[in-house]
Length: 171
Ligand SMILES: Cc1cc2nc3c(=O)[nH]c(=O)nc-3n(C[C@H](O)[C@H](O)[C@H](O)COP(=O)(O)O)c2cc1C
Image 1 (cartoon, rainbow, N blue to C red):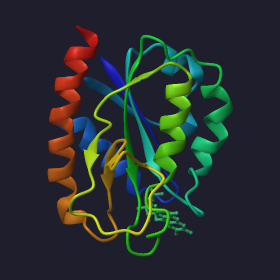
Image 2 (cartoon, rainbow, N blue to C red):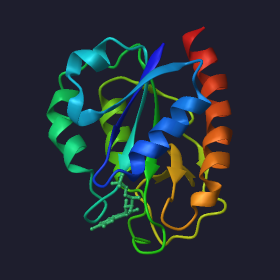
Image 3 (tube, helix red, strand yellow):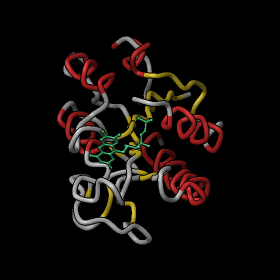
């Protein structure tokens, strides 16, 4: 089984993380805030879902920023990772969910196989996001501030992709 680790500043992402786990209960058996995790907790998993909100101007939450040096101590070769980001496309349209790309780059650099990383930008309206690569988001994107009513459908659609691509990655 895999685990989900998330970062948050004001708690929105905790609820999103719980909803993701519910949609992937066959693959993910634990949800934990990254401020309560150790490097060994991540080392123990072959499948990881990592995510959090974007703060500052395209920055990671403080809990993820504090954990980044520990990510440098983890060998992600052989691990499968899916990412998600929570942001606000209206108020932070120039850096919408940009922090997700910082996690993406880090786990790729450390050898991870990232799945469900070509997610359509259709339906969002924003000026710029670092988390768009080749025209697609590198993970699930959620906007609880402006489109909370779309969160569940977005999670379920992405969860299907995670399930399919995880099966291929692990096979
Ligand atoms: C000071 C501040 C800075 C923010 N910066 C960004 C940003 O750069 N990009 C973005 O997409 N959202 C940004 N947001 C929006 C948050 O990511 C959004 O409100 C999110 O739901 C917060 O989730 P959390 O409670 O889990 O931290 C910012 C919000 C605040 C209050």
